[in-house]
Amino acid sequence: MKVLVPVKRVIDYNVKVRVKADGSGVDLANVKMSMNPFDEIAVEQAIRLKEAGQAEEIIAVSIGVKQNQETLRTALAMGADRAILIVASEDVHHDVEPLTVAKLLKAVVDEEAPGLVLCGKQAIDNDMNATGQMLAALLGWSQGTFASGLEIDGDNANVTREVDGGLQTIKVKMPAVVTVDLRLNEPRYASLPNIMKAKKKQLDEKTPEDYGVDASPRLEIVKTSEPEARKAGVIVKSVDELVEKLNEAGVI
Image (cartoon, rainbow, N blue to C red; front, side, top):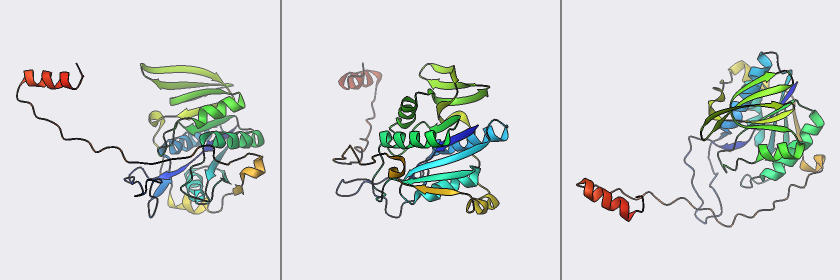
């Protein structure tokens, strides 16, 4: 079984995001970029499936700018077998829309015929949480979202999902799309020898035109702004004053 893992290049989660002065977007100048943490978990899970003898090949896919090669090399160093880069934008400030990403991934799935697609549940830059679900709909495949547990059982996958009320375990027919959550696993660090080997692994570069997909944007970002600064709290002297303040705030 092949496992396809889409990975996205995002601002590193340790970096404080800053908005440009003109409000046209996020400032990416001299900012550290890395693989989306949820996608890292998906790569790790694919590697574990291969180590367990349940997967034969892991293909990492990234859609965006040429710099996404770095992210794919990280996936290859972790243990992916080969990678596909679809250059869908020349501008690092342009984020390829989820529907376009899903259409391109569908084209890759049609070509590669994997038995499982493992995605991060969302990207930490736009938090849309849409690509995996859109891909499953376009393919007509089963889907398991917010996975904190995954077991392959023959032609089925048992997916433990994190829901508002706790945990839910579902059985889905393969092939399937599974979007992973934080508690699924702890991603490994790429060793230096594997980083060196990753430089020689196959990385194919494609364009949306190769797959017959129109990648032109359908949405326009009008303005980007930082959230309002948190206001200072108020110290109350008694329970009665606390109740009065809560009433004023409409809490009770």
